[in-house]
Image (cartoon, rainbow over all chains, first blue to last red; front, side, top):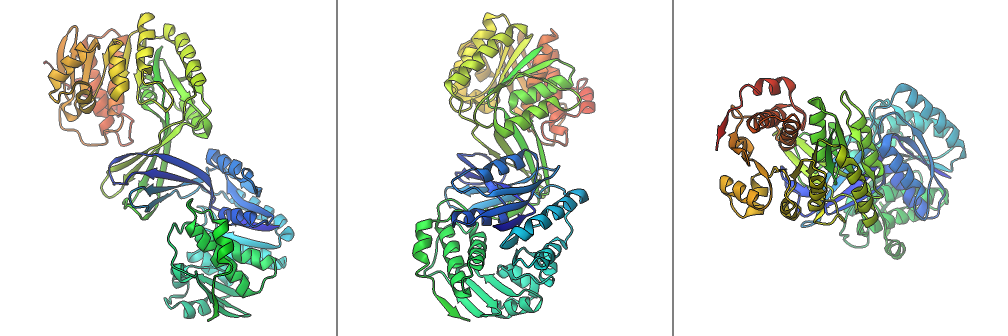
Length: 306
Length: 306
């Protein structure tokens, strides 16, 4: 079982409107809802790849109930080990403009987590970790969770001998890295914020020195740059990709994790992560991936030494 | 008991953001939720004025449950006679821009109403009407409800001898007016769409000829213009009002209805409606009214023969 942690889960809502104009009134032509938050997205992709996945973190209120119902739904459900919380799970609203295809995003902050709720989560996490083949810690922290939360969760996984991937940003990433996670997957902005360097190879190496065993930087259309104890590689999409990048980073995390638990060598993990991310950009629905495109891409993603 | 009908109820959500920019990502700093839809807003104001109110229409899904919980909440709850429906109650999102104070509105279309659900509602409505001192029919029709719905509901109320106010737009208004409601309360645009005339007095008189016994046109900052069997009047705010006009029309409807069931003469009803609408524009929260401002305004709204 792979365990994904999403402390700030979300009910992701997508609206289609003809054209978004500030200060006007808009009729929404289409509404879609699905469970969200980075770790939940990672879990969905892992389940689609055939892995057994457990999702933990917090869920509360009516939005939390809709999220949990969504996790149990569908052809490949994931195991729900979310902890109840008195506040309501946040919504995110993606407003897709029919004329341009562009998206405007509105993200609620998330529920206030009480100290007792955070304590109950830590107990549950400690119970879950020993049964996991890998752990992914994903996304932002809701209000009330200590900024050193991920450092704490990284240490628990490492103490249990379970490999742990961290995908977050800002101060939670800075503190988490110091606890020596097995993998971090920052994007270019997150990496620059962590290291102060905008030069990807230098910044990636610097992030390793800060404590991460392996750093896989996601550089948008330039693909992935991995600096690991086994070597350094770049993997890139075989051609310029058009589509919706929402969820591409989460699909890359699912690729890295599934490759890790299947004991694939790093180049094969990077091919899988790049193919999944690219197939996610190409899929018509945000955050879904195109399985046929994914399988074709697996044979076409170039990996080179960096 | 006053009965308000809201076929397309809504969970009204208000977001505060620093500044809404299309195609950017926004952190919502503040989230507020409350039961909405025009008839629900009218009921809230009537309850605040001390009237016994029953709300009917449709509610379904998790958003419908939140809406129903909201109706039972608060210092002056209203009686919930909403009919369950298999689809989910729509959300409306008002995005308030902190920098400008302007609002961008996103309205979901509402659930599809099945013929059996519409039939069940009609049965319930026929049970409720004889116990009502007045009926208000408010807002848009959700998908699946026949366009002649309001005409049908107007006829049922008139057959029971219960005065009925209609506040809607477009074809449902056109058909509803032909069924001879006691009062309609169109705004300037709705009136122009109904009659083809942009001249308020002429259009208001024309709307009466189409079947409405009394027409109260809400003309924004110009106040109300009423053409009734008892006479013609204008009532206007005593001074230019600044604030959020959301819900001002619904407050005016509550003023007209409460005045009707209290057997006030028309000028007093128009003063109350104008004072409530003005006190709603002035209130800091959208759709709420400022009770102190309302009571002061009651003595200051001028009514003149039109």
